[in-house]
Image (cartoon, rainbow, N blue to C red):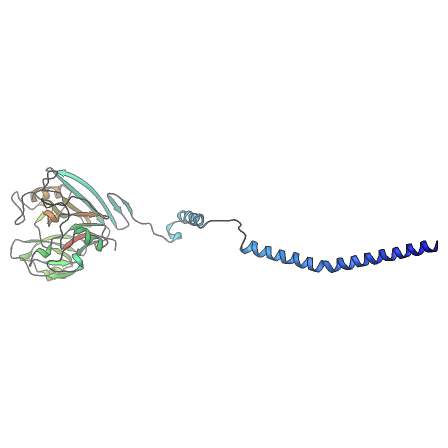
Amino acid sequence: MKGEKDERKKFEENLVGQKDENHHKSRNLWPPVFAVILTAYAAFTLLDAFVIPGDVVSLEELARSEDAVESELPDEVSGEASGPVITESSYTSDGIAITITTLERHDTQIYVADVVLSDASYLKTGLAGGTFGRNISETTSEIAKENDAILAINGDYYGFRKRGFVMRNGYLYRDMAQNDSGQEDLVVYEDGRLEIVTESEADASELAEAGAAQIFSFGPGLIEDGEIAVEEGSEVEQAMRSNPRTAIGEIEPLHYVFVVSDGRTKESAGLTLLELAEVMQELGCETAYNLDGGGSSTMWFMGGIVNHPTNGHRSGERSVSDIVYISES
């Protein structure tokens, strides 16, 4: 009996000791386990914040959403002004309205640019290569592009002559009158008003002092005070009777028409000066003036040629010394 008691006591003591040892081991195990759990949680928090994708929005979607929000805002909130409205045959902005149409008169295709401006400063002239001088020429298209033009027509080809008043954008380049005592010039004043003057009766410096911005020396005048100013036999020196033509006219203050006709082809015969004057009167011009024609006649709009320039032997633009154009800049 005593031996059994001793064995049981020894067993119980061993059991208690094992429990104490296991408890001690268990207690020593928790700190590293807790540390691992804490580290894992911290790592997950960092990954969730900076690495793991969540609520993903692509840059493309973000751009679309920003554009959508901006498009819903009025101009004064979004900070963007509304731009011009442009079609194949028109341009409309706050200061400029251009509409291009076509007419057919006397078996000739005629291109009309109706131009309404809020300020005369939009009506400008450009020089080939940006330089005044004889034998300096580029096509109307080239000069138009260099000057950021919206609409352009060829000018008076001043470089073809040694004499004749030349003023461009307020600067008087040449004040020598042509020998022809009946030479008529077109004056465009700073307020946009057009006037036809006779060179032999005018002084270029005085015109400049009176507020002239442009002076063209080609002609003749087509319409004055709403009345046709040319006759049946009127013609430009050394010109054929029917030609491609270029003209500019004023309907009312800051309301103009730029007119170019085809000619010298089977499709378009061309116009006489009287026929051109009749077209300008039909369009409602109070003042109208003939610019250089023939192979020079070109209308350019928003990067393309509107008419069909030709000299009768070869199609395409002729290089000229200057243009008349409309621009925002």
